[in-house]
Length: 454
Image (cartoon, rainbow, N blue to C red):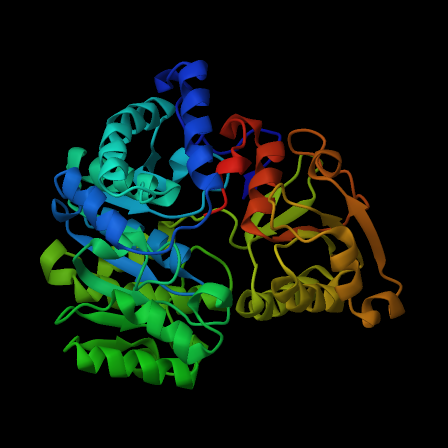
């Protein structure tokens, strides 16, 4: 098990010896932040034009496309691990990052260095300016810049295959310009309703926008109304569909295990298994490679267990929406049964719709809740969160407190709350987890919270 603040910790996620000068990189981050500050620019036409101006690098490498409300990052990591076990050079594009921007774009597990980001931005900016001159107001967005970097990196590093996670939705996401070897839809839940729709059917239709004519589709276990929508779109597009439920059934004992903990990760492992089988002939993937990849996969912040410097168990888990809160409820119950203790929970969330089910789950199991606001404009305030803590938590004598990441985690490997034999759980927004990891593992480098959102 990983240990924070002592020997046995992970290698840094970036190599400081290949960084650009701090001034160059800081200047580039400012320019990227200015793009991000313009807000989300949802649509696909700009990305098509941007890719064309760059010579369509997305066509140079076969890709697997992964969409879904929850689980898409874990499934992407599992698929990348499986394909690497098969001896392939594998690119992976995910978002957002936990600590450093370069984590979003990886080749065989190595993220973009600061120097590579500086070089790519210098290359991309003139192309973006040309597009802006041609169509004022339609300059590529921050996410489109990152997507372009990913496609260029995968092509130039000679990747055999890349696994690409959708940023938001599917139909109009910037990544949807690629022609996938297989399309994956991990799960469907009510999240980002303001952009994707307010029903499961509407959200499923947006996610199913990644389905391409004649291209195989792998579908996780979805709610009935969402599944019906995905199946109808697959039939309409002549895309053969394989369902996790049809292959593995409803009994969890039939599902494959992965190195990531929790029954929901067995669902993700089944989805990754079926996606790997769909491209097995093309990329030389055997069942032994699938088993090896699942056994080796690493994906930080997903019920990640570690030890603090004082030996206490700490668990970090990004559960940030209603579907994730349901999973968290079960994991917390198992943790209490395993340890015999109610945990001390640190949490922070973006928005009441996400916070309500999360705090209900936490309130059923925690003995203390410490609220910490992520450094994001959309983060819920203390008053909003306090009003959502269930009464049963206080009826059991639960303690509620406000805090800040820098005081709750004052230095490497140290958590300032809880008794010597308490278990600490950090959960909620992935942005909060990134800030906590920056404090626990300074070797990861200075956190880049301003560039996390989207």
